[in-house]
Figure 1 (cartoon, rainbow, N blue to C red):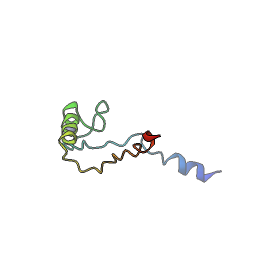
Figure 2: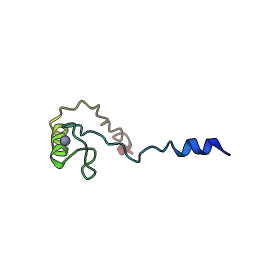
Figure 3: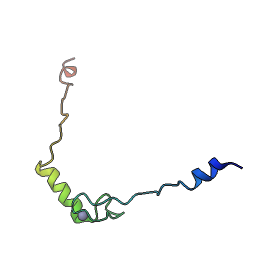
Figure 4: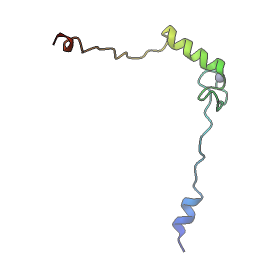
Length: 69
Ligand SMILES: [Zn+2]
């Protein structure tokens, strides 16, 4: 007589929701997740290397002072 049990049992979410490829928008492939293919993954990687992405670089090397000891 537990209605709560029935409710939670029918509310199971899918393991992995299909996500569109960030490059071309097609359904992503499990092997190339989150992209649909190796090509799209390379395209994204090239964009990263060419600096199209604006990411704050945390490159502060604050160990120069420590080296003096
Ligand atoms: Zn793609």
